[in-house]
Image (cartoon, rainbow, N blue to C red; front, side):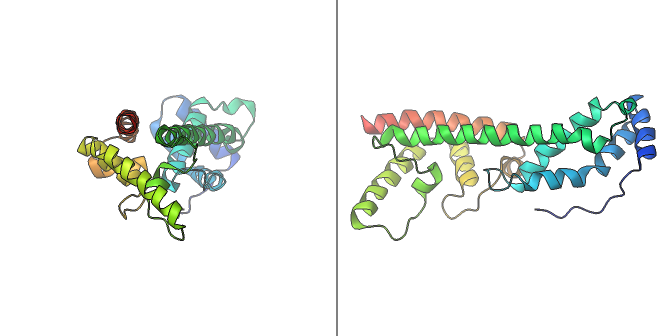
Length: 211
């Protein structure tokens, strides 16, 4: 996970002072509260590594949770922002992980369209090179890959490129939606929308190939 530059933690008194200013509309004070608690976002995000999201996506989601916490923070309750923000940071991280799992289930359903045996290999695994297979397994795997690549050929170039970049196909590294958006000059949300549309087209293409 990326290294975060050391920041000065606010004392309880400083936190209240900045919270008062932020509540009055001072954007600089709000930013100060956010930045002073960013190390906690990194700390929470580490617990969600390996659950389908890149480090950048985890930090992004955790930061959104922190921003929400700062917006809702009531300094008059006598609770530190660090304690209050934990709920919001974890909530956004967990929601992001759950959403990715849902996307992965849709990918598995896509595989099942042409695999009546219900093989639960991921979309990326079906297109990736596989080693140490028996002759029979290798033949079956090649058939799967051929069908998927044939279906991929029916996508628009932009859709195909996003799927390839996201899943690290064709010897590419896996990229987060944020990274792909930066490459293509579009938002992360737009990249997700395009991939979802691509999956819908892939299902249709695979059904045609199977008919």
